[in-house]
Length: 183
Image (tube, rainbow, N blue to C red; front, top):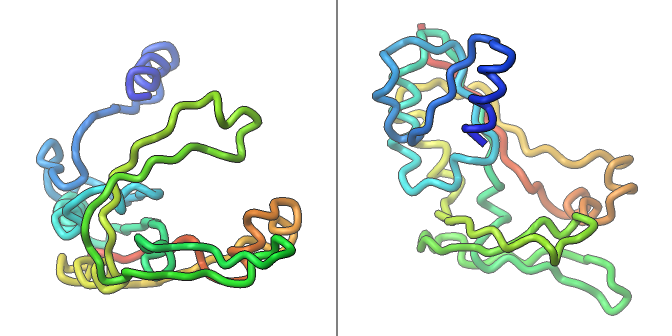
């Protein structure tokens, strides 16, 4: 994807630089050079979340904003299982091993695709964390927490996509956090 993005930038220059690196090591960038750090569903897939928060803090300008989303650690646990009734309805969510921080590799595919069996399984490293494992490193790095959100799919979206209805009914799938680097 980076190669594709670089090719697009060469074809139609927008002044964007694409780099490959680790969110725990941002030494490629000088201190205080970014206004915003945004991560969508990625920070949960790295082994050292506190190092990522320290690295992001270093490269953000004073007043800079950190925004990220992760799978909700309270509900996406190593022993997650939907409780399904005889009629096929989802009556609840079983969670387990919340405090088990043992890394593992999850293999899955986008089952909502028209041809899910034609797509190879993804292998995604998982690093289970608790809610405090996310919140405290943000504060420890020096950020001031602004807001935490646990969004639900809307009722209209849930009615069009039954797999989302169970999340609307029972638990948040995603945790959002935004914080600021003090001036």
